[in-house]
Image 1 (cartoon, rainbow, N blue to C red):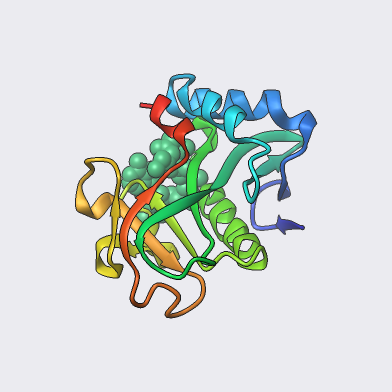
Image 2 (cartoon, protein in one colour; image 1 turned 90 degrees about the vertical axis):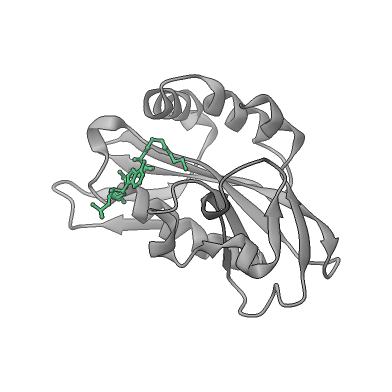
Length: 180
Ligand SMILES: CC(C)(COP(=O)(O)OP(=O)(O)OC[C@H]1O[C@@H](n2cnc3c(N)ncnc32)[C@H](O)[C@@H]1OP(=O)(O)O)[C@@H](O)C(=O)NCCC(=O)NCCS
């Protein structure tokens, strides 16, 4: 699947990442975060079942990237619930605040839905993610395994009511522990 955004000064494409994008994806993450941890994390998670990445491409240059991987809910919930963690998302500094991050998030959430994912969690800026429908995860009974501010851990139900009755701690894959 790919999405074209004609409102940009030159066409912007959002599409699934390909093996030939890997080096550029590293550079986007390193430039956006100012360190290699998130780039390394993506390289380690790539290939994990139910994980996937999207890139934003402008003038044949990868300018943004987003990645999803499955998390586990330790607690009370249906066994066959698929919850994905959104992390990381990055846009090259020179391209930020042009809607690219939003386009990546909105496009890839549709892919999560098609994969049969019922909910997505994110640990990030509490001023940014609510615009996509994310709310505090604790309002849905979900805690983060890491000691983070309550408002920074958020969840979006893709299937309304999917988390009803769920309580517990969300655990990211072990690769995240090395990405402090
Ligand atoms: C966060 C990020 C992916 C957003 O991408 P983007 O293309 O700049 O985002 P958009 O243009 O779609 O949206 C811009 C909005 O995001 C907000 N935003 C961007 N970074 C933000 C931050 N660190 N905290 C809060 N809001 C932020 C801006 O205020 C802007 O809001 P406005 O539309 O009300 O002016 C990008 O800024 C980035 O790569 N940051 C560095 C890496 C990072 O922090 N990733 C997220 C980890 S949770």
